[in-house]
Every structure is written in C-alpha cells, then in structure tokens.
Length: 107
Image (cartoon, rainbow, N blue to C red; front, side, top):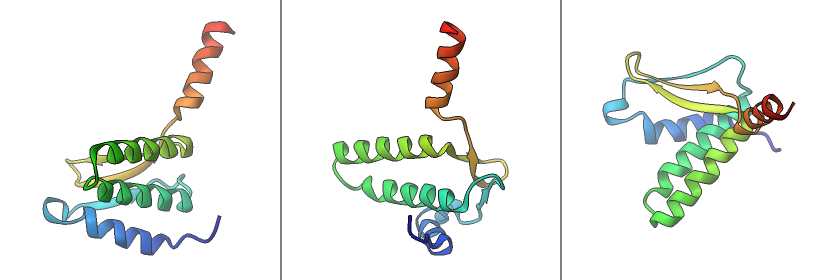
C-alpha cells in the first residue's frame, strides 16, 4: 500500500461532515487504531457520502462494500452525540465473531 496522507484525507472528510449542526463536533481515533486504517475508514466514509447523490443501487452497493472493508479492518465509526464526538474505534469483525460462534456450537 502506498503512503496515505492522513491529514489530507481527514481535511477532505471534515469538509463534508464537520459542517452545519456538526461544525462544533470533534473526531476521536482510538490509540489502538492503525493510522492508515483510520485514513481508509475516513476515505470510505467520505466517498460513501458523495455516492449518496448517485442512483440508489449505486449508493447501496458502495455503502455495503465500504461497510465490508471496515468490517475486515475491524473498525467502527460511531457518533457520541452527548460529547459531540465522531469516534473511530475497533470492533470485532463478523468473520471473527462467526468463527467464535461456530467453535462454540460445533467445538
């Protein structure tokens, strides 16, 4: 993978998301998140927002693909409205969760 310019990707994402009602919100990235993975998450989130102006099928397909990549990277983007924070945090992928469940069921 080439070098990702995290600051540039964050700036582009902020122009789309940290405006209007979200202008005073902050983004917080957990320390255990790889910075390149956070850049990919922000890039996909930004591109998904831009895809929303396309046809419904295109948008839904892009959104699904983006969520699958984030799941593979074990990343979740979540809002915490009380603190006005958009947080990038880790989560267990469905692949890992399914493997654990299968092991519990079938040993």
